[in-house]
Length: 73
Image (cartoon, rainbow, N blue to C red; front, side):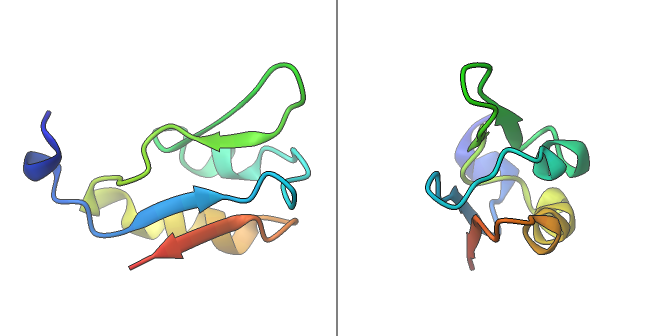
């Protein structure tokens, strides 16, 4: 699927210095987030997720205990 076809509505970033590795982002939307095995910190799989995932991405940001997720509209 090309970037144009998935109609990204937002851009997503994780601040590695703020991430505490709780995994809440992965639980909420595993299509966008994952965790590294070496330090359990979250990372972004898809920095420009499809518009259909926008609500889940916002829930993940709100549920992040370290407030490490930034959403750029």
